[in-house]
Length: 366
Image (cartoon, rainbow, N blue to C red):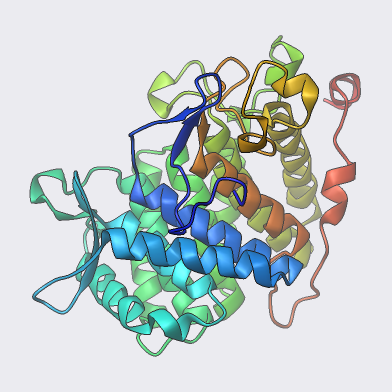
């Protein structure tokens, strides 16, 4: 990320290593994820350089996408419209800034905008405009919005919704997911449940985090006769409608599983903890297979500095996207610095890094 940041604070959304050029594609949600990941890593490392890079990146994205509305809301506007998810992830990025008062006006307006899309039947509507797209990407955007609400409550924002309002939205989203399950729903809602549990201690949040994480786990490919470098990714070949395998997807699922693991360990749920620890280790192995790490990965690339540390989309697709790096970073930070649950014994899960099973060991253990 740092090697690709330019003077205005921006980072490329998508880069083609073999061509040595950037794509003209764009996506605001994924750009704000980059800011969020850099803020979290800056906190972990206590790095002023990273913090300043994250601030400049956030400022760039807000300048580019943030627009006030006549209703006093603030939305993130792209060519395709204004999405609930973009407002929520932009809000999460601001929340991660240790000096977030710099963006307090935008944060308050984003909060008001997200509130305006809360819906008693759907949990959340998904588009500010165009209204014709309302309902699209519900599995993603409802979780992003609920996580923003949960973090607003946990961090004590003055314009945060009540716990009861969060709970009502959670219960509606839970009911809709149970009617038609989708893996895109899982990582964002798992994180929201962990955050709400940290605030309230209500068992229904922990129970649902475990329920949806358990449902997701069979999608992680391991003993499927795959080539070894594909093991650990998340993909269901019997349900291609759930989406193709992708580094960004694996990273996002690991974010949710890291919170589920921390929650299971903190509540003494050892069976779930062991299950999620194994999934995290396998997923981290998959991401390491996709990372440009040295000469053996970059011998054919003439702009090596631009790709070192980045993640390929798949072993057979070397295109790089900012959200692949961002989700992987966010998952790694959660592993190294797990969410704390007041009145419960916190636990470190650093040892996940050293517990990556070999293919044979995994086969022996089942």
